Image (cartoon, rainbow, N blue to C red; front, side):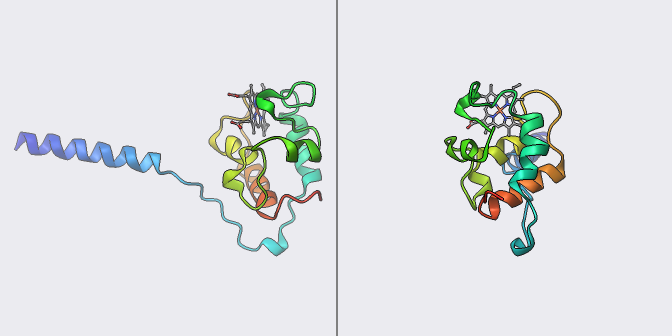
Length: 124
Ligand code: HEC
């Protein structure tokens, strides 16, 4: 009886652990034709204020410069158009690893990044 209980608890702990590992993003863009996420606004409200101190062309931490559209797009791995989950610009912020200092991005900011990339990451 006792071993059964211990086995039960171990199984439960494993299930919770696996569940946590399998946490996938809940971001979904429903109507991409109406997406209003703009790079100009992302640059002004997110990148310039929360990222460029550590990600400029003169100080590109991790090989990533977020100072201009061209630099964002040519930083390896930062943005894969149409693939937010394969874009470190979104993913690092979603995971909460970036920004390395300061407050994490809000849900709205994350959604904006997600939508902009899912829409093809245009220079808009
Ligand atoms: C205080 C400094 C700092 C700030 C602010 C900062 N970063 Fe970083 N970032 C780093 C460092 C350092 C690395 C390199 C980490 C490494 O290589 O392990 C990095 C790496 C990255 C990478 C590459 C990660 C990879 O594995 O490919 C991305 C993308 C990134 N940062 C995005 C951002 C974004 C977006 C912001 C703003 C929301 C931001 N960072 C703000 C310091 C910073």
